[in-house]
Image (cartoon, rainbow, N blue to C red):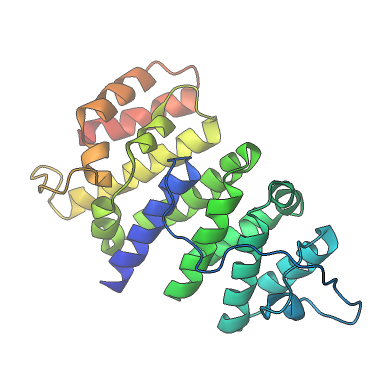
Length: 247
C-alpha cells in the first residue's frame, strides 16, 4: 500500500502543477517576517533552523538550493524544503527560485521514499505554482515522474484511484505544449499497457468518481483523444493512435 499511496500523492501533485486551483497540503507554519538580518558567518543550514524569519534574498536562496541538492540528511532536507516553501509564498522569490534552477531541485524530492519529505516538496511546488511562468516547468517535472511510475504495474492502482481535479483533462487540449502533451499521452499509454498485461483493460473495474481512471476513460477524454488524431504534430498523432485502441 505504501507504493500506491505514494503514487496517489504524486498524481495529486500533477493536478497541483496543472493549476487545478486547490491546495493539497498546507504548511503548519506560514511565512513570517522579522527585522533580523543574516550574519555573514551563518551557513545555509542556519537558514533552516527556524530562528531566521526574514525574507531570503537571491544569494541565500541559492545557498539553500545547493544545500537541498547536496545533503542526504532527511532532517536537513525537510527543513530546507519548509524554508523554501515559506520563501516561495512571496511573488518575487517565486521567480528567483525558478531562475536559479530550483524547480527541478524541489521536484526531484517528490520521488523520496520519505512521506514527510514528499509532502514538504509538494507544499513548496504548490507555492511556486502561483507564478504562471513556473507552472509549465512544474507540469513537466511532475509529469516526468508520473511517466516513470506508470511504467511499473505495481503503481497502476495507486495512480488510477488517485483523486484528480477535472482540469487534468486540459493537458489533452490541442494547444498544450508538445513536450507536455507527449508526456501525458505516454502516461496514458503506459497505464493502458499495465491494465492490458493484468487483463483489466477489457473488464474496466469500477473506480470512484473523480479518480484518474474515471477521467482517462470517461467520455470527455474520449472526445479529446479523437480531436488529437488531427493534431498538427506528427509525433503527437502517432502517439494518440497507440492510445486509442485502449478505449
